[in-house]
Amino acid sequence: MAEQWPELVGCAADEAVAAILRARPGTEVPVLPAGSFVTMDYRENRVRVFVDAHGNVAQAPRVG
Figure 1: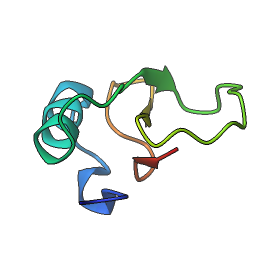
Figure 2: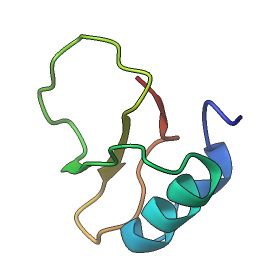
Figure 3: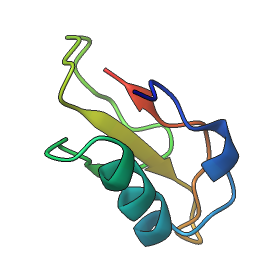
């Protein structure tokens, strides 16, 4: 099972969310602006997607 998705950097957020959910069904996939403050707790069922001002993935999404 994938733990990170570097190939999604530069993709549209909705495409990234769909790809992550295909790889890890049932995962929580919040989309957040790059640089957002987030909690530091690690969760196996969460993959955060950070996007730039254009709605494209700004950094590789990963489990946590």
